[in-house]
Length: 133
Image 1 (cartoon, helix red, strand yellow):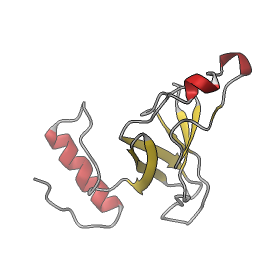
Image 2 (cartoon, one colour; image 1 turned 180 degrees about the horizontal axis):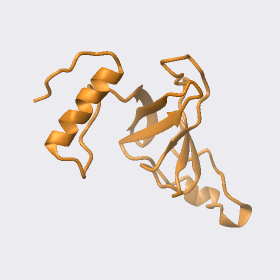
Image 3 (cartoon, helix red, strand yellow; image 1 turned 90 degrees about the vertical axis):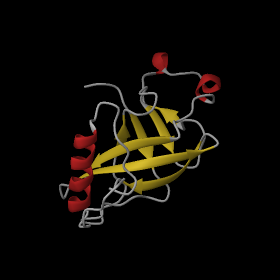
């Protein structure tokens, strides 16, 4: 298993299927150093590592998330969830469930694969497929 970071959306982002809250959101889009990110804070709030591996508070204060990043969680109902986080001026300000409306193509994805994923997202969320040109 690779390294990841943990994310705490604020306000909480509950499961849209069963309503469960306080899910364990993770991602590999950030620095992947077992940081704990809290929405509304510019730098990681902490780090889940043993003391000798922890990044100094001074160095941690300089680390930022990208402007757009994806996070994921698995609910007990069981539903696999993807969400998108957005930063402004280096601060995580907004989180939305991943949908056909806010999805972007991954670097390894062809146009055909991306359109197929958009259709699957629309179907999964109960929306009709929309054309994106």
